[in-house]
Length: 133
Image 1 (cartoon, rainbow, N blue to C red):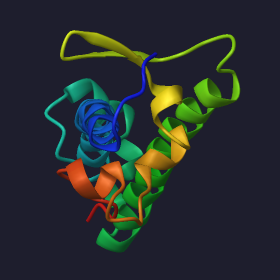
Image 2 (cartoon, one colour):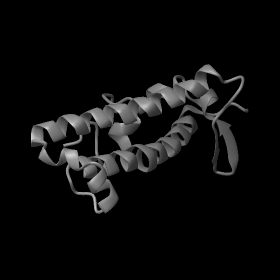
Image 3 (cartoon, rainbow, N blue to C red):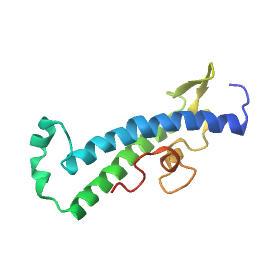
Image 4 (cartoon, rainbow, N blue to C red):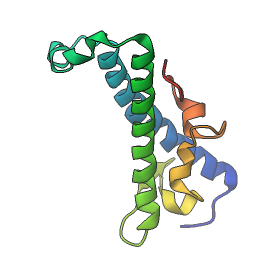
């Protein structure tokens, strides 16, 4: 891989990060939140999780925040797995016609998600945000 500028690295990481946050994190979190808050249109899920019907708003908030943390941590650990095993596996992103190995672009792949940092993917791209309710 040829040398690339900091600006290009940022663009590639943001391209990938936006997809991870919107398609994976927010998508999974939205489904879970809808179930907890009894807003899911899916009758199978409503029946499967009917025990959640009596939760108070505070209990719903706690469960949704736990789901947010769990989903975020899963993505973090998934990204770290690639970095820790970079000789055996990699995530290749095609950007503007070129392929890039993310572990070669990012200093610490898992930390890109950074839930409390303004430069982290959650703060930059999430439509739900860090705290869910």
